[in-house]
Image (cartoon, rainbow, N blue to C red; front, side, top):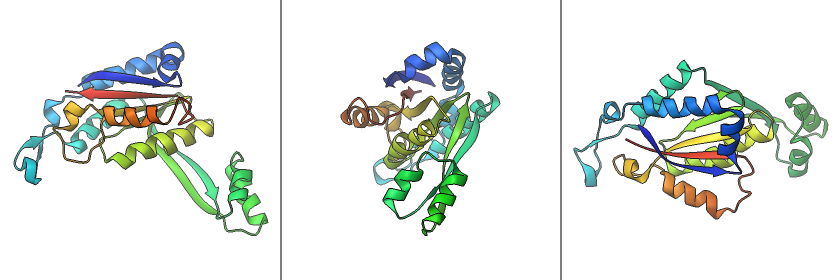
Length: 203
């Protein structure tokens, strides 16, 4: 596959080029190494495309996962404790997990454990490969990448998406680069408050 477009949010791409050039090359190499023709394996059951051979999100994800794992990109989780009390959440937001739990319980509230998971992290850079529904991209950008950044685990997040030209050859409902670029730009320059690189790929 190939990178067709990139968008740098809050100088995310500039950060990679200056501070993590080897990782940026790895991401480019991984995209180039995924064989698009091998991922065209899904026989459509949808009325408008019945019987057509489409690009399979499962196969594309498997290709990216294999390549990234080979290069040392690993899954990472950031845990935290939540409660129903908004003021208590604000108070404990930047505490360690041990302190969060202790503070919440000391206030007489129930502490509920939660976590965010990112599939690929290496040297403070996170990558999400997203061939799923629209809502998953918003969760990646506004929850996952942001949570890892605010907690000090990453410096920049990368979101890999299909271009519309690729998405049109997939099942309906899959998010695509142009649409998600619009959603990010519409929020204004400072939202989400995490440096990001959006990557649009095509065969």
